[in-house]
Image (cartoon, rainbow over all chains, first blue to last red; front, top):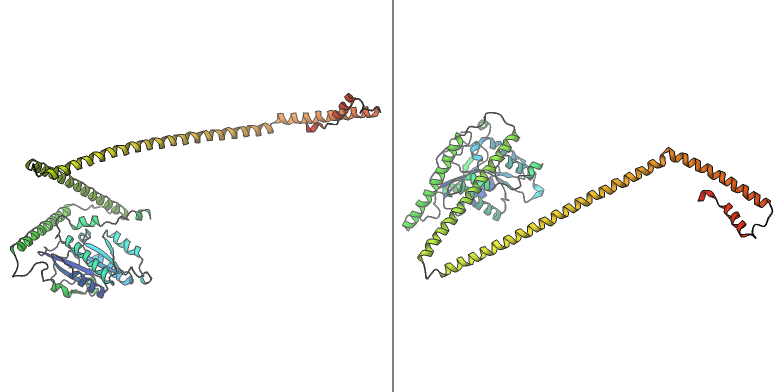
Length: 180
Length: 244
């Protein structure tokens, strides 16, 4: 299958799957490990990928949340992520996609401007999170946050759905873009 | 097409296998009935939520997408409108839930009040305190609204005064400019020019007459300084008529 669809498969009982897409293998690995160390009532599965489309040979559970990790130090990661976005079905963008920008802490190494990533997230109407994945404590906090988001997107939290969460996470600074 | 060109890489995280270990639930021995019931209830809530999500997706897919090709800006505007609709519905729902909860609470309270008599002193004290606070709140709200009205009135008056003063200043300005214009007009008019010419003529004639009289008196070789009347006349003849 070349396009990821959100509701193709039935969910497994008590299982939540997250897909981390990015070019930095080491960072993804560390983030995955931090997430798996989090205390969570449901079963977590973390899948890592460098790019989409994913090979269709693997038997994969339903993916509940896709996190695109962009490294602000390399333009290559941004380009790869933009290429991957076309392989994701539009039903995912109703709250099941999240952008994560790392490396904003060291301004001198940043080759991508923050506004580029902000515009990308705004075009796809998905939340954008900033986190320096190199630092352990930030990574642990971000892992906690992602685990909570994943639980909501997987439907494990009664009363909140992914779309609900999306409108809650909506950026409050979306109006200045109209003035530009 | 893309899958032929790229080399997609995917690997299961090492911890994914480790995820088979169920968290929070102790295995086999030591699992109490309560834990099992808790697990079942949680799974039930999860399945309900997931069913709700699938149902809403089905409903959403029944909506037909518009056939015409809209511009990106229009699509964005439409998306914003839809998002605002979602927000409105959500806030409505939250307020209704709040109202419902309040009604439930008050119903439970009244039921309890009817039951308990001797023990309800704490409850009644709290309720009385709440009522007093409510009265205070209402009173201070009234006062603040009155003060706001007064403030508004004062501001309106100030605005009026400003406007009248502005209009008066404008009037003064127009009057002044009109006067100045009239003055300029008058100075440039021909009547004045002819009058000025005549005036100059008369001054010259009078000066000549003055000099003639002067000559007469001096020529008569009388001592004009002795007689005061004559002295006055001579001094008057000296006056330059242009400076009058």
